[in-house]
Length: 132
Image 1 (cartoon, rainbow, N blue to C red):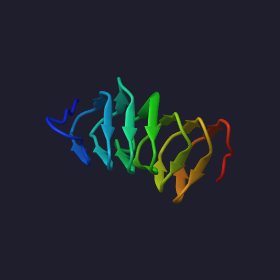
Image 2: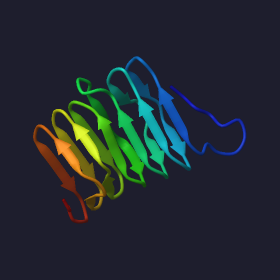
Image 3: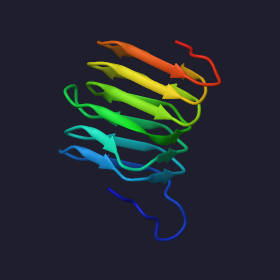
Image 4: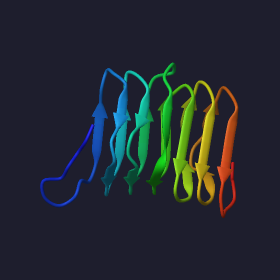
């Protein structure tokens, strides 16, 4: 999936799909909302200035491990095993994860909403602190 602004910049993007999604590089000045009927993965870095909300379904994985830059909170509406990597500090919004949660940030990891994780949660914060 690719979005290219014909002129200017892209503000907000909402994608709803019945299948799995493999996201290409994307830079947004606003929010990213993804609802997929399968796994959510990426082949390019995501640079999102606003919030990010991801829903893959309780039985599908979310794997966003490339040099991402999520400035706003990242919320998981539904996902099985979730892995997030952020090149800056990471704010976790309200999330429901039916498997494991792994979050890595090059800065502090904080939370802005309740986290419900059935499996193990692994948080790796660099040059900052981890707050739960």
